[in-house]
Length: 188
Image 1 (cartoon, one colour):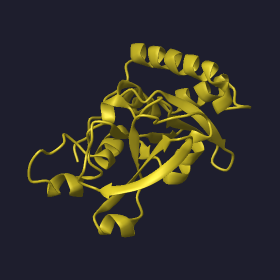
Image 2 (cartoon, one colour; image 1 turned 45 degrees about the vertical axis):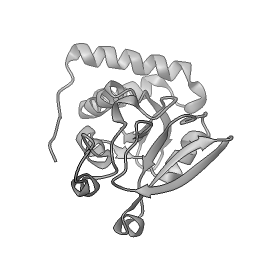
Image 3 (cartoon, one colour; image 1 turned 90 degrees about the vertical axis):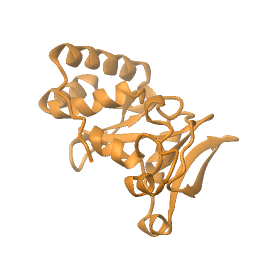
Image 4 (cartoon, rainbow, N blue to C red; image 1 turned 60 degrees about the vertical axis):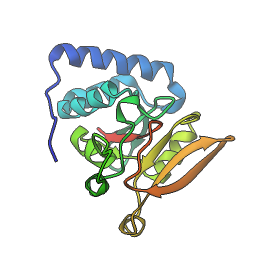
C-alpha cells in the first residue's frame, strides 16, 4: 500500500479552514450545540488531521462535522457531498478484489484509498446516521465497511438512498462502477 501523504502548507491550511468553517456555518443542522471555535482549536492542535481533511476535500467529499464523542473528546467529520465523492468513484472494494481482476482493473480500491487518506470508510450504521442529516446518494452509491464473513465469501456491501429509503446491497467486491465510490469519517 503506497502512501500519498503530503503536508498541508500554511496557505492550504488557512484556505482549508476557511472552506470548513463556511460549510460548518451553512449546515448548522449537522452539528447542533457545537461551536466552530472549539473545532478549529482541536484542528490546530492536531495538524496531521488537516492532511486527511484536505484529501477528503480534494476528492470532493465536502467533509463536515457531524458529531462530538463525549467519551473521547473528538469531533467527527463525515463526507457530506450530495453524491458519492467524485474523486473516489470507479474503484473496487479492497486490494484483494483489485488483485483478483485479470483485466479492466480500476485504478485503486476503496479500502486502500481510505488508508492512504488517513480516514475510515463509513459503516452501515454511520451511513444511516448521515442520511438522518439530509438526503445523500440519490444518484450514486457508496461502499461501506463489510462484515468479514461477507467479505470472505467474495462480497462487499454498499448503500444508497432511493424512494426516500436507505438501502443496503451486496456486490462482488471486485466490481466497480462510475457511480459508486465511498464516504469516509475522521475523528479529530
